[in-house]
Amino acid sequence: MAKFVPVDLFDLVIFGGGGDLSLRKLLPALYHRDHDGQLPPSSRIIATGRSEMTREAYLEEVEAALRKHLDDHEFTEAQWETFAERLHYVRSDALDASSWGDLNALLEGFDDRTRVFYLATSPSLFGSIASGLNSNGLISKDVRIVLEKPVGKDHASAREINDQVGEFFPEDVIYRIDHYLGKETVQNLLALRFANSLFEPLWNRGNVDHVQITVAEDLGVGQRIEFYDQVGTLRDMVQNHLMQLLCLVAMEPPANRDHDAVRDEKMKVLRALKPIDAASVRSHSVRGQYQSGAIGGEPVKGYLEELGNDDSTTETFVALKVEIDNWRWSGVPFYLRSGKRLKSKYSEIVVEFQQVPHSIFPESSYHVAPNRLVLRLQPDEGVNLTLMSKEPGPGGFDLRPVSLNLSFEETFGVRYPDAYERLLMEVIRGNPALFMRRDEVEAAWQWIDSIIAGWDVASQPVEEYPGGTWGPTAASLLLDRDGRTWGKLD
Ligand SMILES: NC(=O)C1=CN([C@@H]2O[C@H](COP(=O)(O)OP(=O)(O)OC[C@H]3O[C@@H](n4cnc5c(N)ncnc54)[C@H](OP(=O)(O)O)[C@@H]3O)[C@@H](O)[C@H]2O)C=CC1
Ligand SMILES: O=C1O[C@H](COP(=O)(O)O)[C@@H](O)[C@H](O)[C@H]1O
Image (cartoon, rainbow, N blue to C red; front, side, top):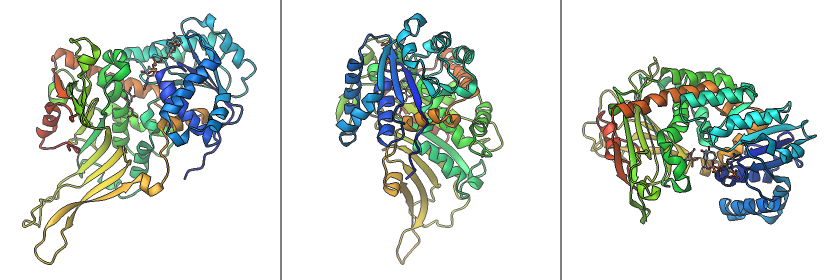
């Protein structure tokens, strides 16, 4: 088990500290790190928002959230008392920097410690908050600013936000979150690729038939529907999480794990992506929206019914066929899919290798299936390698596909920390390796913008799919046309 090295003394100010993300993810993550002794005793967590709220009222909200989002055995009165000592709430309107008096007062005299500003608000506020931090004299020497995703809604708005924040903060203290980069299994992809000599010689067009990346959710859009209806799955999931996964699978080996070494390699992949535009959008993309259905035997409503409006074409599902124009991957499709209200919460990366060139087992009732390396990101994180094996027995020569299956939980026997636990500690330590650099975010938006424009020009239909399935039939046809099938179909 990795040791929990305490971080340096810090103050963490969360703009949007009473919002869903803070209560559901950030504060439980900090509670865990506190529990494991990683937070110095006098480090503070200062939440802020427009709402008038006493510290006591805020503590009540946080306690209720922790009780809800932590496992029963994880929440203890003693640990809560310790954690609550750190928590403060002050009112401040991001759009009115003159309302920040209480925040100023709390921070005054504390500029000798690491100071982190976490912007867990709409990205439209990032510029005003950065400017307010400057005008209130809160940008201390050892400062970092964290930008929650999404950074903008397209390339132009991402550039504008990056310019606004960049006016007051240099790039090396800006931490753009993509929480998938903090997932243990995503980091393990680096270990699998670059700490084993087995895979690298095979990791190319000469041996790989295709790659699939699936991030499936069984949940619907829930409380965030108004936000979501302006965004859709392409912007919410593909622009960031799936493209980051794609980059980690496809990039060249970096010389080391230095933040810029890894980010430079990811950038080369983003630059090599073949654009999907009006001419190719119909053959290379599928967008869908969930209808009513059933998940785990329970009926679920359709998206439009949840929205209470029947003319939205916002996609809740996307599948793409992505091509990378470089020597390593020329001719190897990367199929990406992500959606809400699918059959189960399931994320995986599948690397399917090429068929053997000639089978010497014509009598086998199983044909020789290609080997598949599957990285399960969630749930039951692990790695699976399918191989063909001889069926035991004295007569004939029958083959059977078998799996070498590694479950991380069984092997390591530890709780898998939530991505935000790792990411928050990395911010305080000042290590930006697991965060997105400005050019990565902007390059990803540029590529996504072309698809959105293409959908518009080509009048791409929004395919319906019943909740509780693996998405629209068109997503299966996307692979079927190439003689392939998605990994998980049961
Ligand atoms: N929730 C999630 O699971 C995820 C969210 N995100 C992103 O994180 C951001 C926050 O999301 P989420 O927590 O769900 O949103 P919420 O609407 O739940 O919270 C938004 C927070 O912003 C504060 N806020 C709004 N306007 C202002 C203002 N003018 N000045 C100061 N504070 C303000 C609100 O407090 P008050 O009303 O008191 O002002 C509230 O605490 C969004 O950009 C979202 O896309 C990203 C990944 C996952
Ligand atoms: O960023 C987001 O991610 C979540 C899915 O995250 P996961 O860690 O549970 O896989 C998604 O539900 C949300 O819509 C999106 O904004």
